Image (cartoon, rainbow, N blue to C red; front, side, top):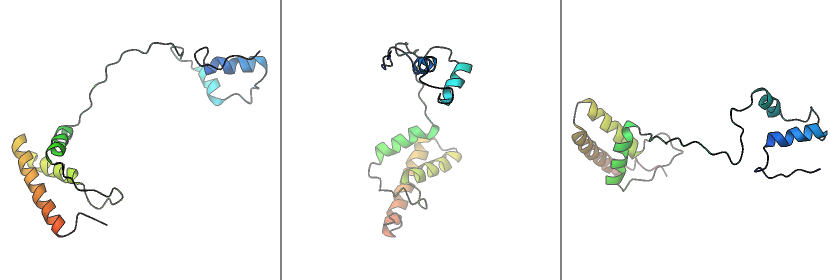
Length: 136
């Protein structure tokens, strides 16, 4: 007798088991995961109606994420970058490198940010004059 194919009624494991028991599938035809599943069954049966436990999602931030977000908020006119060309660094990467260099000199966050921003603005103006930034 044909069984239902709706995943709400049974798992794939129970459907394959019934095919093997019924003789529709031989031992040579059974999938590789079936024997592994029999040897190492899951702790909880993977059913459709199982309630998932609530696990709070922790925010993942790196140290430079806050600075990067502030840079993108303040300096919105970023140039287009060719992702295939790995020879040139993005403006954001240049800014973060400059900011980290200034932070190593024990400057406060605000002063390091402002100096790095001024340095990036001046280098971008020079790069645009020399047509270094664009690789068309």
